[in-house]
Image (cartoon, rainbow, N blue to C red):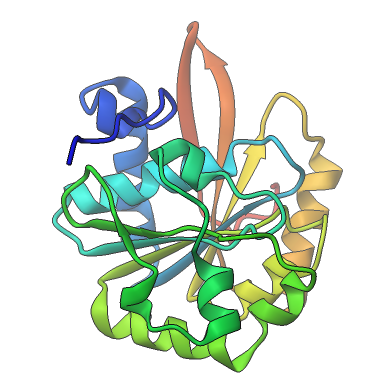
Length: 230
């Protein structure tokens, strides 16, 4: 079988020595050292609004963890507007929704990628009831099994302020990373997104300031979620 060619926005795979790839490795390291008392195994990634780069951040985070010899599972739980199958060049005919509807085993829906140690579960066909599926017992059971088989599980979700899906998944995660488009999102919106995460008592472990133009180069900036000036 021929190897699939990842799209340009999977830069950690295409150009691992680039400054942006190094930024993702720094993000991985900051997350790993953001807590000592709690293991961050399931990490949810969201944004305040659409088109802030959360799915690209998710994919590159997953590759960065896999390149550090972690066994990684990337789950596309943005059931309304999935992106990971485009990024990785995979089929979206079956995936998370298929498993939850039909009670399939984890092994039945996992797809392998070009990156060693990285597996992916696509979103699957769009369901009529995404929130109900994500809050189901089947979803909880799937994540429990994934915890037993993988070192790190990264979950791509819809924007936190658009629908309740991200809040539901946040309660099942060990930590949340919030991606903010630094050029478009105002401070008030970012603070509302932060409050939405904290409202369900989820743990905000960090914020990624995306699309920063610093010395005419793209650099990803990260700081801990405990800071209030989001």
